[in-house]
Each structure stands twice: as structure tokens, then as C-alpha cells.
Length: 577
Ligand code: ARG
Image (cartoon, rainbow, N blue to C red; front, side, top):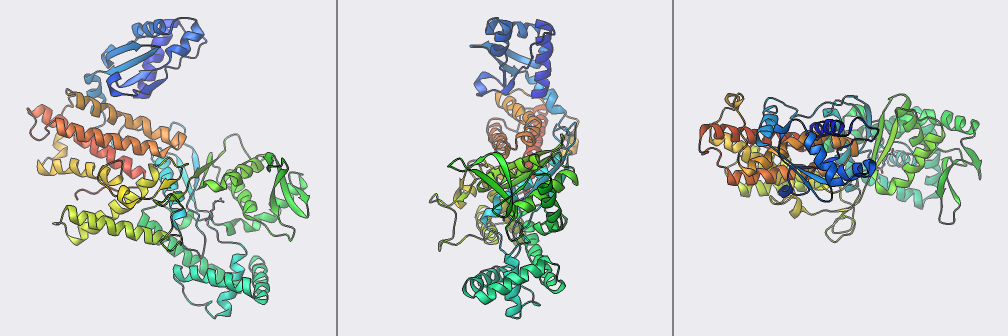
């Protein structure tokens, strides 16, 4: 819709003022309040400056030159220089008509498909995923779904922590306690990590052995590698069960952990040293980057090789960025991590640039997100103060949703409750996260996220169920409606039509600015507007057959908008509850 209005206004601006050098950008926006109209054009003040005329005069001149008058019901220039635009009911009906057989609901595929690398989730081997991994996993997955829907080539990457000195410790502990050949559950692995750390801290002899084990691991010692591989496999199986529960797309092939880059680190660091991108400082190899200084204005180096020759988190990230640019040929390379890593990524990107690896077609983007807080506004923890495991969170979400669903509809079978509980529970968890502006911290509240009122997943899922139940109650065959006409007559039908037609603007704009909370906000508006429509406009008992058919079609487009919109966020709907 915005594209269309922009086009119509541009033509009017050109015919009003000639193809001048001025940049004719109509600046079309959704109306801030529906009393003012459906959209507004905000160009008049800017153009007035350029053309040295009064804004209102500019606005009126453009209105006089607008073609496609049947598109508008009202064009109202208002001070200090906006045009309030109300679309005509006929035009809205005509546009909606196009959505009837359209699975994409008007969303066009990208004209220039890009290769987009989305790095997300990235948990650590031999450690349980915790609430901190929730946000990266959910946000990244939604990005991947949206890019994919828009026709981009999406490469998912989970940069798991599967390498490093802690593995020396764990492997040594496994050998010491004769557990190297047995299978471990993730909670056992988690415990293992703690116990081996304890041994490491307590016993210098053990610590020495653990260090030697790291050397063996990095040197490719077969027996050591085999134990390590076991740990990786066990952890990956566990990640897969989490992703399955969470309805997340990440698959085995999307995992490219830190170990993958290990063999390239020596070459990369040597090359940077040779080209004087990096230099030796206190025995370590470091990169100094412009603009990165500590509070005393002393340059903060990015260390890429320790004094003892060991590599670091940053070294692996350099190698991964290079790989994503050169081998994966990413046009956009997106990292989703918590905001505490902001500085790390800022330095990483500067270093990649300094190394000369950037290309004209590649862009690195860090998407930081805030913390999950408990209702006491402190980091979200269990009552005893421990970090909350992701699995326990997911189980609790499903349990709570099952209780709600059973109370709402006691007639449902056990299997139905199970399906509904998964959709609602996981949906609520995801939506509460996604609707928060991701940069900010957000407060975790079961009661709020699972409420059927307010801006929540259950509210949206319920709106969807309502649309479906109309079709069930009326025994309506959707196919028989496909040739019927949409008629927009009532004010609330007008509002719903405008909302539904906005979908095709919203989705691409989110791929652009990554503001997932705007998609949530939009879907909430759709559901709320639908409820108003439902209250004001009888559907199955509409006054005549034509408006009954039209309203059923509006229901169907609403249903598909909610379903598709939620699916782009990784949230499922159910047909009844
Ligand atoms: N494995 C890390 C963690 O669990 C996150 C990795 C983030 N990605 C990266 N490219 N550094 O905290």
C-alpha cells in the first residue's frame, strides 16, 4: 500500500512541479490516529523549503494534480503541512480482492535476493542451555524465517562453543573417573563441567594434566579427539531436542562451531602479523583499532594470540567472519547475541575491516538484545538463585498452557490438549520475548505472557480460533467463496481492510530494520481490529447474502494474516481451543 501511494504521489509531485532536481519523496506513513484518516503524506514542509513556498500551498497543489482519484475518499491538507489520506471503500475492496487467492497476502519477494548469514543460538558443548540462550534462539529463528519468506538465501549458523581449554579439564576428569566411554545426559554433562572445574581449582597436578590434555586435543591426538567428539555429539543431540520443543529451524548442518575454524587460526594470525595489521605487544599478538580506548584514553587492543601461543574467542570470530564473507559469500552477516558482547563485535567488525576482508557487497550486523529479568527486576533465576535451564522453562510453559486449555474447554481430548498446550505455551514464551524491543531488558512473567487479554500470543491465537470457528459453525466451504466480492461499507470494515493491507508493507520493512516487535504490534492491531469488526458486524447472520460472503472473506484474510504473521515469528496456531 505504501509503495502504491508513494508512486501515485510522486507522479502528482512531478506533474505539479516538473521533474525538478528536488527529491520528491512523498513520505507516506500510516496515520497516527484513525480519526485523521488511513495514511498521511508528510512531504509538504520539506518540499516547501526546497521550493520556497508555503507548505499548505504545496500540499494543495499536489492534491490538485493527483490522478487515480477513485483511490481516495478524502485528501485533507492540515497544518502545518500534512495531507491526511482516507482511502475509498471501493479501492480497499478492490485491493483486498487480490489477496483472496494469494498465499503471500501481497508480500512480494525481494527484487534483489541476497545471501544472508544469520548466526544465532550458539550454545556451548557440555553445558545446558539456559534462559540466556532463549532470546538469541528465538530472535534469530524469526529473522531466518522472514528472510526466507522474502526469497533470500538464508544460511543459518550456530557458532557453538565446542573448543577451548575447558575441554582439557572435562576430558581429563572423564578419564580419571573412568567415564570416557559411557553416554551422558546433558544434566550429567553439566555436572561434569562443574566437577572437573572443581578438580582443576583444587589439585595442581590435575590442572597440569588438564593443560597437557588441551595440547593433545589441539594437536589432534586421536584418543582425545574421540572423547571430545562424543561430548560434541551428546550435546548436539540435546540441542536438537530443545530446538524441536521450541519449534526452531536449526538443524545439524547449521552447526558450525568454534572448532571448525581451528585449523585456519595460525595462518590468519600470521598473515595479519606479516601485513602489520596486528603487532606484538607484551608478547601477545594484538590489533589496535581506532576509537577503542579505555576510560584513561589508552588504546584497548584486540588480542588474537596469547603470549603462550594460544588463540582466543576473538581469533575464532575473526576466522568465522572471514569465512562468512569469503566462502559463504554473505551479503548480510548477522550476529544475535546478548548486549554485553557489543564491544566485542564492534571491535571484531573494525578488525575485519582493517584486515581488508570486507567487500562492497558484504555487511556485518550485530543485533544485541537485553537481559531477561524476573518480576523483581533482577536477572531471571530460580528461587534458589540458579540459572534457569531452557528445558525446564519449556516444560513449565507447556504445563501451564495445558491447565489453561483444559479449563477453557474441558471437552477436549488429551491429545488435543497436548497439541494446544505446545502451541500456546511455546508461543507465549516466544511472543513475550519478540514483542519486547530486543535491545531492552524484559520482565519474564508467566501470568502476563499466558493471558488471553492484551498483547500476547494466546490473544492472537484466540483471535485465529474465533475466525475458524465461524467457518465451522456456519459449515462454510471456503472454496465456494473464492469468486465472491468483497464489499467494504461499515467504518470498522474500512479499518480492518486498511490493517490487512498493511501486511505487505510490514514484512519487508522488518527484514530491513530487524524490528520484530513491530510485527508483533501489527498482528495485535489486526486481532484487536478483527474483534471490533466481529462485535459490530454480524457475519453468519449478516443482513444479506452479499455482505455475509464479503464478511466471511474478511474473516478468512484475517485468519491467514494472523497465521502467516505468527508463523514468521515461529509461532503456531491451532484450529480450536
Ligand atoms: N557460545 C557463546 C555463548 O554461549 C556465544 C557465541 C556468540 N557468537 C560469536 N560469534 N561469538 O555465550
